Amino acid sequence: MTTSKKTSSPEQTPLEEAYPTTVEGLVLEERLGYALRRAQLKVFKHFDEAMREHDIRPAQFSSLVVIEGYPGVTQSNLAQTLSIDPPRVVSLINSLEERGLALRVRCKRDRRSHGIFLTKTGEALVDRLKGLAEQSDLEATQSLSEIERRQLLTLLRKVYASEESDD
Amino acid sequence: MTTSKKTSSPEQTPLEEAYPTTVEGLVLEERLGYALRRAQLKVFKHFDEAMREHDIRPAQFSSLVVIEGYPGVTQSNLAQTLSIDPPRVVSLINSLEERGLALRVRCKRDRRSHGIFLTKTGEALVDRLKGLAEQSDLEATQSLSEIERRQLLTLLRKVYASEESDD
DNA sequence: AGATATAGTTATAATAGGTAACTATTTTTT
DNA sequence: AAAAAATAGTTACCTATTATAACTATATCT
Image 1 (tube, rainbow over the protein chains, first blue to last red):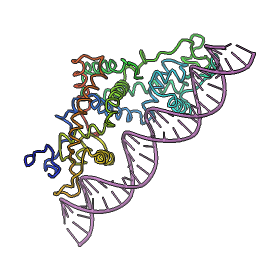
Image 2 (cartoon, rainbow over the protein chains, first blue to last red):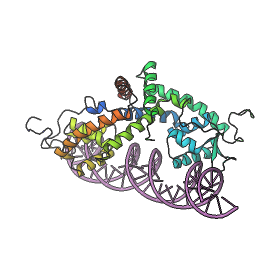
Image 3 (cartoon, protein in one colour):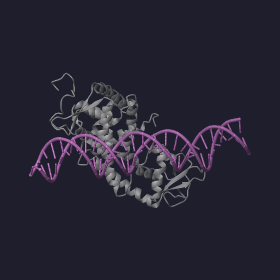
Image 4 (tube, protein in one colour):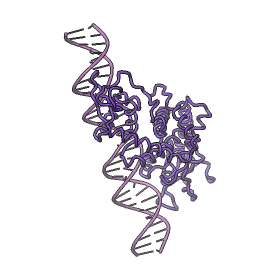
């Protein structure tokens, strides 16, 4: 770095010292998007492990919880609630239906739409999954105190809840 | 919900009332993974818009910033630093090199590895991008105060910085 | 010299996510 | 009531992301 006026002269070979394995000190540390992605990667990894036994993906878990909370929810409701696209809901519900966890019931009043309900199996599973998910959250955020964990949740909600129009 | 003993009886049709478009009140609101995903989606959407003009993806931005901070960094360094896989680094650096933003310099001491450097163009661009990224963060988190924004960043770092072994 | 390890690459596959176009039904307009 | 427009769900398709395995070329170890 001293033999040339240029900040990073391509003439020089990589430094002998090992480069750090963190981004400490870089501007990247200040970027919310980066921090969010890294934190999410970590939390999702724990989630995947916790759900592996039941072969449940994050989107499937979210769907099951929403259906449990709003039995008879339609697919478009679900799409809007979870901010996903209608075609994605189709394959999501297909997978749940094939596994006997949920089922579509054609709505009598408006025969275009389906109400989605959990089966007994689905209800039993989602109960179990909710516990596993909570445990997984705790494990993934062991470095936080209970107060910090709540703070984080509150801040994140504040961020995503304020949807201007970009959704 | 009153005619049957079952929690969500498939016999009934979907309720007349519109279902909410948020997950308020559901267990989902308590899940960190869900909150992280939603917040990240929002922040990334703003980021994408901010970077559209320069056709830069999040991973490209991160790479540029790391290369700027550690000129001569090798691809394996980069992979480790950003927690991505070596094959992903290849296409990442390819795209940057094709656009004249970075370049590989074969290392004389160990001819297996490449040092990555920014070109003049790359340096100029990353300077501009850093400003845009900061602005985009602010826009995406308008609902937070400056103090809250710092808190959030600190908490997120605390989560992802404590990598046990899962990485 | 021969075995082993490492840096980077290529090929490949699984998956997420998004767009466009189609069917069936309902609602609105004329 | 017939025609037009809108809506719910579906299908087909396309792209980007990410992971895995196998290959090459160098380097290191014994």
